[in-house]
Image (cartoon, rainbow over all chains, first blue to last red; front, side):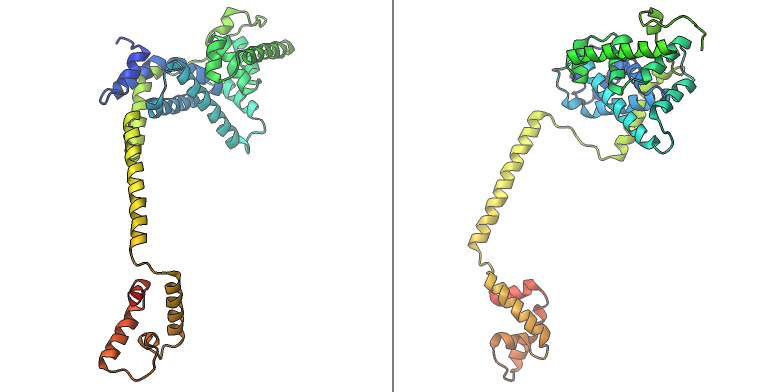
Length: 182
Length: 144
């Protein structure tokens, strides 16, 4: 099946009778990239699946109001990031009674994740990343793993390029320090 | 999990590899599961047809025109019909109160302002007025 261009998807999604097929194209095209972005934030596969579904439903409901000034993927990435952060906030709120430390809980999730295929060093790196503040963690993941350019990241996260560079620099220093302590 | 005891250096390319996995066939089945969930959600809610911006603008203009017309008509009606004044309402309130406290006397007699014996026609009128006096709308008739 040929992959549609973003412009074709956006055009077809506004045509009565074609919207489902066009939305399906959008899902097929972006589901993997969005999933990995979400997964690195929420860690567990089941949670990532929930958040990805919520993200796509939000996209389906609001794509009629999408203005093409920002690219489609930038817009999708932004929704996925917001949905992931909202999900973590809710989870944090719900878990207050059971876990003294949310960071500890999410770290345990990582250790018990049956879908973690990395080696010991990758596990240590992930554990160190989880100790970063949420937004710094997102910046680090986007830059280090996904190699997203600062300009693009700035559009997605609504933060200046300078602040993102500083954030990434701090994240790297913290991770190196944490791993040096081991 | 594989064992790898090398020292951790962020510049190592192997560290950048995706360490997470997904159940087999996850991405292949995701779109179908999503469509099912969307259908389920939409069957629960009343479907809302999304209007494009030009239609929304026309609907907004029509609503505004209709609103202005309704307000104008209401003002016109208020200024041209015999409305009940505050004084009338005060009179009605006094009459109702008197009627409540003095149920021996007919409201008709109160309005007429006399306490003489009523003839047959007047007694019927008095009964009718007393009956109508049970609600405010009927009371309005007394003052028109």
